Image 1 (cartoon, rainbow, N blue to C red):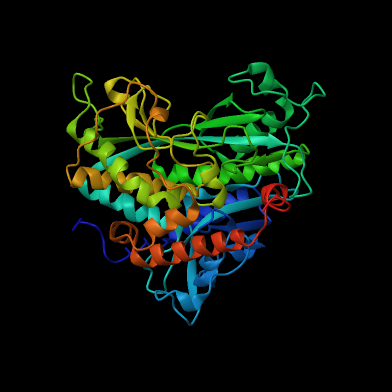
Image 2: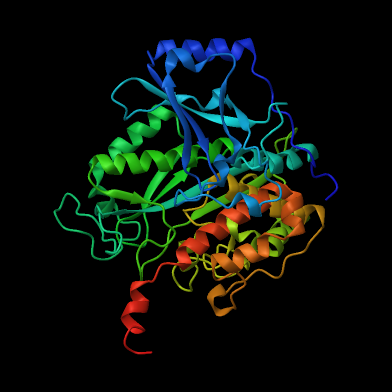
Length: 464
């Protein structure tokens, strides 16, 4: 993998035209306040909120780089355990990405939100920023003259308001006045139960120019899936990131929860972030996954082989939480291994029937709880390795992959153990990122391990 960049690239410096266009946009929409967003390692929105007239100051915004050491619980990683960390806790520059500026449509006052890039003082990319991790992988494809089209499919549940975390989640009450008892797979009437909520969701997404497409009802009670129109990976990762925030806010306003937990309710299907991926030649725009006759190309097969070979070692990036591994069980529409097949929904890597121009592979492993930037980086990085190494996949499955053995980690602890000392991960994503991300995930697992569960009190308290 000698073509992998060893130093973080310099991000392009803002031009006067960027300032002018963003200032015109703020004035045109009469913006009074700007939310300056940074996706952290867990996918939580960090940043600052500031008056619009202060937003475009030339010296820019700054935040401590160690912001990326915060876990999903709000706790912090022990800095002494991280060799790659700067002990001075220095600042990083925040540079707004003009392509991401959009309205916050639910705000009472005219408010904008802008996703920011994170830079060192010499303008090199902060290695542990999720957007920069994805950019690092995308640069590998760009050097080959290849473009990427990606289409995410994101699942989520609507649930009743749950104020007691010890109490199980339950489906919410729709307009009929009754909660959904069983999942109505692709049910139109089940979707219509929450028409007012979804009408607001579409209005909010349109105001932000998010590239969403179809909405469907999934297998679980009040489980939904939103599809995104295929396009550039970085832009689509931004849109998934913003959609999660939008969907949660929309649900709050209708007095329900929207959750992207991988497995929010026992004995029900989990929620995934399926990634449809294809490559095309940047000059001719021809799909590189199928030949003129529509047959799979050697490049396509090597891409799949890379996913099969390396994805199990990158699981913390697509299954980032202790809850993620509860989803990966047989016969619940979630894969348990990395077999592939044509139009086979039991495998981890599904190839839908498609014409030459639309040939793609659907990675069904990531959970809905995954950080979209890191999930895409992991999937595309593994596919790239397969191509560069000329790997060959096994034979496609025509029967159920649930008849085959597990080939994925069964817990976050096991997944981190495979990831944190992995030389391939360090070369793909950078040693500093792998070390810090592993420390964050291990800290989260240790916090979870201290909690005694209801199951333990139920079956062990008086029986052992």
